[in-house]
Amino acid sequence: MGKSLTFSSLLFFFFFTNFFIDSATSSCPIDLSYVETFPWNTTMCREARDPNGTQCCQTLLSLFGIGLAQHLKDTSRFQLPDLASSSSCLSNLQTKLEALSIQPSLVPQCLSATNFVANTSQCAGIITIQDWYQRVNGTTQLDSSCQGDMTGLIRCGSCVDAGKQVNSQLANFDQNNSQKCFYFTVLYAAGIANEFGPKDVRTANCILGMPLSSSASNKSGDHLSRTTQLRLIFGLLGALVGVLLALGVIILYRRWDKKERQNSVHEEYVSSFRSSVLPNAGAKWFRLSELEQATDGFSQRNLIGQGAYGVVYKGTLSDGTLVAVKQILDLESTGDEDFCNEVEIISKIRHRNLLALRGCCVTSDNQKGRD
Image (cartoon, rainbow, N blue to C red; front, side, top):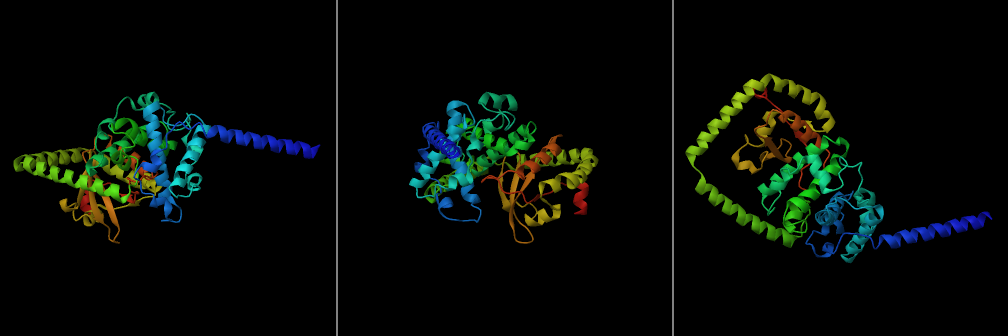
C-alpha cells in the first residue's frame, strides 16, 4: 500500500508538472521575436568576460526589458499577470537565445520568473500606468527629458538624471524597493515617455542600457558626431561675449549671496552627512582639493556634458583611476536632502548607463579655504 501511494503521488506530480509546463508555453503575452533581429551585442553572453557573469546578466535584463516596456506600452501594465506567463516568457527567451548559439541555461542563472510578476508589495504598489501617475502626481521630468532621439550624450544624460529624480520620489513611498522602482522608471521612460518605443536602437541603448553590436554602434557614433558638429556650429554663432559675461556675474553673485545666508546650516549638514549617510552608502569621502586636482580645476577641457541637474567632468585620481565627476548646480532649499537620497540610491542601483558610485564631496565656502 505504501509503495502504491508513493507511485500514485509521483504520477500526480509528473502529470501536474507537465500540465503546468504545457500551459505556460502558450501563455506568454510578450512577442520576443525581436531577440533574434535586434542588433544587440551577443558577445556579452557568448564569452565569459567576468567570473560572475554580471555583464551578461545585465544584458539579458535589458534585453527582456525591451519586451516588458513594449508590453507596458500595449497594456498599461508594468509586469506580467502571473507566474505561469512569466515562466513561459523566460522559456521563450531561452529558445531565442539558443537559436543565437547562446547557452539557454544563462536565463535561469540571471533572471527569476517571480521578479516579473505583478505584485502590490513591490515599488509602492504600482501595477498599472494609473497607479504610476497617482504616485508621481501626473507627468514628471521623464516625460520631457526622455522624448525624441536619445543618441546624443546630453539628451541621454538628461533622461537618466530625470529617472534618478523620479526614483528618489518613489523611494519616499517604498525605500526598500528602490531597485524595483528604478526598473519601473526605466520601463516607463522607454515604453511611454519616448515616442520611438523600446525597440528603437537609440532608445534601448540609452534608457534600457542595451549594449549594441559594433555595426549598430558605428552608425550611432556617426550620427552623434554629426549632431555634435551642428550643435557646436550653432553654439558658436549664437554665443555673445557680453551676454555670457553678464550671465556669469549674475550666477557668481547668486551663489555668493546664497552661500553667505546658508553657510552655517550647510556646515552642520556636512558634518552630519559624513558621520551618518556616507558610511551607509559605502562610498569614499573626497576633499574638494582632490577633485580640483583630478579635473585640472574643473577645466572646460575636461567637460564631458551638461544636463538638467549639473555638469559632468572627466577626472583622473592620484592613483590613476579614471572617474566622472558630477558637479550639482543651483540646488534649491531642499537640495541637501535630495543629495542624500541620490547618494543612497546610486550606491544601490546597477545600470549600464550609471557609473558605480566611488565617492562624493560636500563643501561650503569656509571649507574650501581649509581643503
